Length: 294
Image (cartoon, helix red, strand yellow):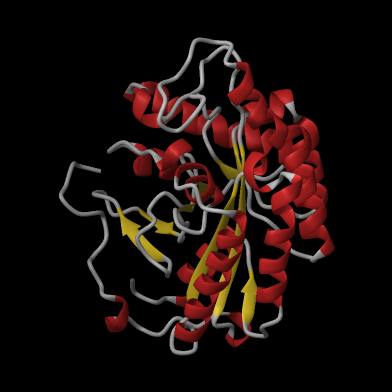
């Protein structure tokens, strides 16, 4: 799309929209998004959010993240399986090369994989136009090779996009994108040539990385945050459906002293009746099929 001051969608205040109705009369569509990421040991990482990147190998911060793939994601899988909840993980495709067991287990659990760059070491905004386009296509192709299903959804590393990203996503067959954290309902994005892609609400608030890692929140506060977010959306959803994303990083939420807080929050949500436990593609497809103009 061409550079612009506002996004490729109309400004439509939430109280001036058609009613959003979810399957079964649900008030809230809940989707759970573990970020399954790969960081190369060849590239230096920051040891602390306020520090610059160190010289490779930055063993301690790299090992923290590797814990998520070696241990944390499996703890999350066990919890969600126990609660009979599916996830919609975002996937760096380098995981397919280095840790294919994670993808294989996610497939057994019926998880929906979203594209999430090749690696979290490099964002789309750090690439030239041709490399960005090829990275998106390679990501879609590699996930399809690994899972048998071409990914429908996309989340950029760091939620980063260029002016070309949405067009490139459509070119590669993506049907929805989660980078735009500006709403509690899905909406349609229309490109300059008339092609469309759906924005499905992701969250930078109900997200363990910024809350626990950057803002120094506690796990008890994060549990309370999830419950309070749900309470408000559930109340509002009685009038028009809302989407709630729970965004997780296995190396953060997947450590032993935090996982029980996630379980408590999810069990609290499950104590309510009018919740649709959906995947990202189910939410996007429902938005398109509903015909609601927004």
